[in-house]
Image 1 (spheres, rainbow, N blue to C red):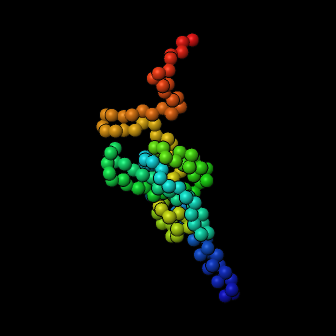
Image 2 (image 1 turned 90 degrees about the horizontal axis):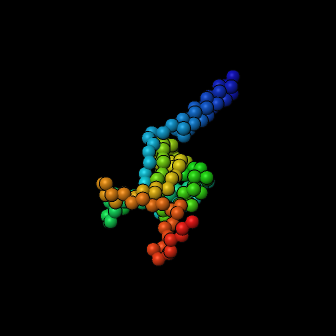
Image 3 (image 1 turned 135 degrees about the vertical axis):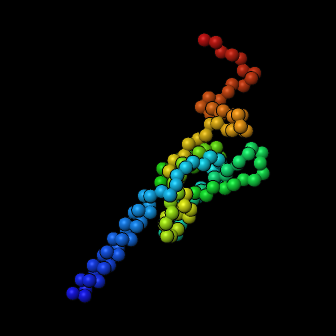
Length: 147
């Protein structure tokens, strides 16, 4: 009879811990986007490997102060997309997770789920530089081709 109670108590405890982790991993405290330049992306961890990265945020162009946004990536596909656009201005969509008790799930609370390349760079209010990397501009000395 005592063995059954101990077994049942352990089973209930395991189910409660599992339910808590499922809730903490699927619920987001906040979500948003950050724009900047990817500075670092590395696969870290002793047992639980996660992708840890660093995004440089510049509030004003030419400003000397650079704020860093530290983030975690769980999905290898998203990490590969981030690695492809390293050094370019990007926008990261992230979800902030709270309540995860160990660093096994990542070193930060910000989990990146999507990356997009930012083609517009705002220099100041009302001044935007559009970059179109799909078609490079022809050199000024090149003759015009008429068909």
